[in-house]
Amino acid sequence: MNSKTLLYILKRLVLALVTVWVIITITFFVTRLVPGGPFQSEKAITPEAQAALEAKYGLDKPVFEQYLTYLKDIVTKFEFGPSLKQRGRDVIDIIGDGLGVSAILGLTAAAIAIVCGVLLGSVAALRRNKIIDKVIMVVTTAFVSMPSFIMGTLLLILFCVTIPILPANGALSGGLVLPIITLALYPTAYITRLTRSSMLDVLGQDYIRTAKAKGVSARSIIFKHALKNSLIPVITYCGPMLAYIVTGSLVVERIFAVNGIGRAFVSSITDRDYPLIMGTTIVLATLIVVMNLVSDILYKVVDPRIKLE
Image (tube, rainbow, N blue to C red; front, side, top):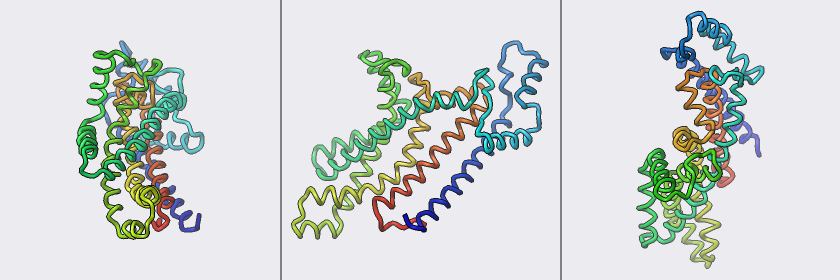
C-alpha cells in the first residue's frame, strides 16, 4: 500500500469522523425539539415525579450542556448512557444484543444478493435476448419495483398463512429465513441488472475482441477479463446496498418481530428514549460510513488503474 493510498484512507477517516459528528449533533437537537418527552407517556405520573426523573437523567439541564456532556461521555468513555424506558439497562448493552441478530440478518442477505445477483446478471448478459435473459429481466424488474415491507407482507401471507411452513416470528427457530429473503430480493434484482449492463459493455470492448482473435478460451475471457471488470459498478453499489439493508431492516424487523437493532431503533423513537435513539443512530451511521470507505478501497483492489484521490 503506497503513501497516496494511505493518505486517501486518512482523509476519508477524518471525513467519516466529521460526518458522524454532524449526525450526532443534528439527531441530538432534533430529538429535543420534538414536542413531548420520554416520561409524559407514563401512566398517572405527577409533575413532581416527572421532575425527579428528569433530574436523575440530567434532562433538567440546558440542552447545550446536555449535548456537551453527551459528547464527552462518547469520546472519553464510549458510553451512550442508560435507557430511559428499559430501566436498569445501558444503551450499549441493548445495542449489543440487537446488533448480533441484525448482523446475521444483514450480512447473510448481502452475501445472497451479491452472489445471486452477479450470477444471474452474468447469465443474462451471456444469453442476451434469449428466453432466460428475458425471464430474468422481467422478474428483477418486478422485485426492484416492490418495497420491502410489501414483499415481507406477501411472504408472510404465503409461507405463514396459506402454506404454513415457516414461522412468522423471527425469534423462533428458522424465523430469520423470511426476513433474509425479504431484505435480499431488492439488492439481488438490482445487482443482476447492474451486472448484466456492465458485462454487456465490457464484452463489447476492443480488448475482448483482441483476446478472442488471439484464441483465448471463452472461459478465460469471461472470468479473467469480462467478469472482473464488470464488477466495478457492483462494488460501487455495495456501500449503498448495505445502507439499504440496514434501513430496510428497520421495517422488516418490525414485520417479522426480529429482536434486532432496527426494532430497537423504531421502539426508541415511539418511546422517546433519547439515549437509545442516539446510540442506534451513531452505530448505524458509523456502519454505513465505514462500508462506503471499504467499497472505495476495493475499487483499487479490483482495478489497479483507478487512482484514489
